[in-house]
Length: 454
Image (cartoon, rainbow, N blue to C red; front, top):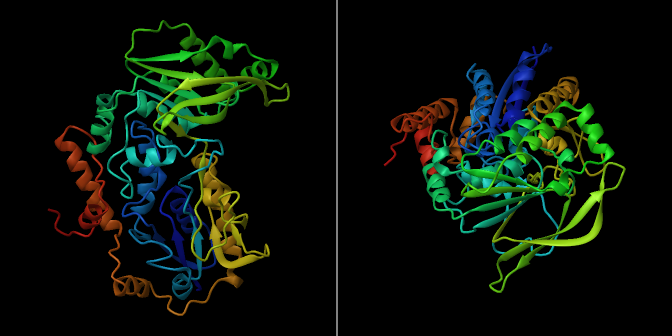
């Protein structure tokens, strides 16, 4: 029977789901799958892109862990595509490759002052508070008043982490350096700005409700934002999620405020215009134009300009994919150009043996369910494209291991992840917590490879 040797680059949900779907699918050939990731640990943005106070994410990790722990997928962590292993290398050892590298960069926001000192991308901040090994251990938390631009779940994660009292994060797996950084923050006010109205937000009801549950934090909303137009009223009547969000807003509007030490302000109908510099050249204010409903589901400018004094700005306007060496890339949309997961070259012709799934395929939208359907679509094409698979010169499973060892790549494997996982849980247990993440890459690799850690 024919055997498919498949490489998957990216060990987050998209890559793991693709492997799982292929292994469970009826097919006229055997399968051998190797999963590569540049990080020493698996799970991608589930481990490094979600705030640590979201326990429901643990359920997703449990499901992913169950797939990997079956033992029918090999993992090679701490292997960088493009340097440690290349597309040419994969063609020598596999019949096909699926890229599932996600989208981890911040999308740009083209307004004056966005690059001032004190202006940050939300994705970078999330990577810091999640203990990503490739980010600095320290973060400049010096502002008393902060602006967060965006109305999606990431914007709410950033706002919540900035306003939440750090001792309330101690039951989570927050790294020690992150706790100490947040503990020293002088923040008193966080302002979240959305271009449209409160009934057109992109966050989910659960994320929204969590904001109002923060201890010693006042939720501040402005009554002028709740003079609903017909489109907003129809959304409340027809969409259960919007109905719940409106109910939560109604509860907040009835609360008394003024007693908490921190405040979280939600501003709507606010189109970003400029990040204003102070005399020292750093962020001093956020300037925006007041918008209003246009009657067609969008908004239009009113010409009224407002300004809020802040000392830091975080843009949370979306994620963006990164190009991969030797792989076609759409610079405008931040994705690998593809037809239902089949990668397309410059002439829009299908590139044999090369596939994509997840956010690098369709952009950073949708939840885990979309990732599964994405993977299923890609796998269907992979299975039916057998005639155009690569013909590798060295397809044996041992040949890839030999290649990495010959190049001196300190790769990690599934046993290594189990060792790191157990180590992190032991660190947490010593302090009465579930887990404390190891942040340093070299330490992660040493623990995973059973090497001595001083």
